Length: 446
Image 1: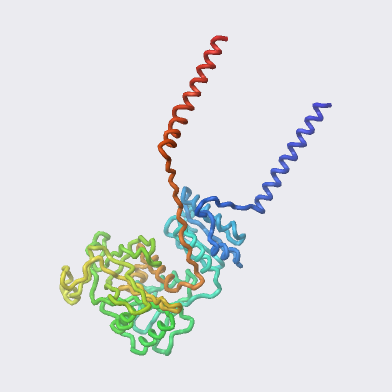
Image 2 (image 1 turned 30 degrees about the vertical axis):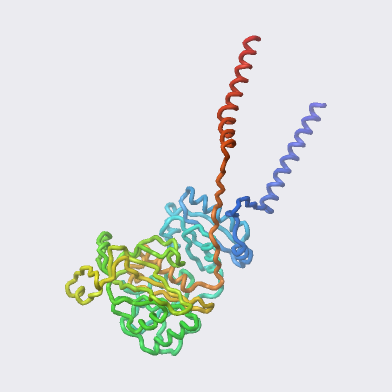
């Protein structure tokens, strides 16, 4: 009877113990708590990101296009931080090699890409950055849709043209980002539309009328955003407007012998250098190709409350050829130290006002790099979308400083170092050896 009673008690204790384990596990799944014990709180989201997640009204889904490995594990840990603060944040992973159709569906062309989706809106994030992922969530969940206008009426690239010089593919890329894209015939109306988040002047072949230039100036005064894509020998009517904001158009054509290495023409300069401290080109490392481009530069003396800087350059092998007539007639060019612009040649510049309602301008010395022929060549599309993102940046986007891992080196005194050496290396092994010998001798005597 005692044996039966003991067996029953043991079974009962085992059942109760297992029940407690199941209950604790279920409770932990429903009401789990994370603790970040690192000094820099590197595994804890910022208060801004937590606020965004807790205020989510719609479900946000993130698809990580990662192959299996360390990067995928890092991404999982990173996304788990977001999922912890909101049940409306979901994530999954897809191997782009095993599921190429899914990658094509979201225009994923590189590994380690995050696609952030909400409803019909989605956009890509290329690095595991809290600032970039949180801002992507803000953009895809906002209700209003920003409108980008492309100026027309002067021979500009047509956003509906599917030919090799058209901008139809770039228009698709912008609509995929959640923008409305429209043409703007400024000749008809006296003012810029009130819903204009950005106006793009893309390769005008004819000069703008004075009234149109004045209209653009007034738009800037009200805090407008402009993107100028101006090819060589164009844009004369816009030089005064740009110079007043600190950017100067150069009268040259960029020649780059390095283009031959990529199988291109020497009038298609390769853009390989970028400003590391500007939001457009920070961490940007892709080469871009600008067919038939001109150089731009920043004025030596800038107007009050205006900042301007070069954001992209060619390699040192290129130069700005100022003798355009000879270049066209002879179809060859030789660098002239006296008149030509030496490489690296600046090809893109940004200017902005430091006032609260300040304007933003980006000037690129080429308009063909985002046409249907060149848009998907190397980093052209990425650079163009970075420019658009900066120019249309919303006020509700947040800035989150990167977290640095604090290093605390262990510095030992001479005595401590000797102890750390002698105790584990000599004393402990010697003690074990002596004890072993003593036991061996005692057993031999027995």
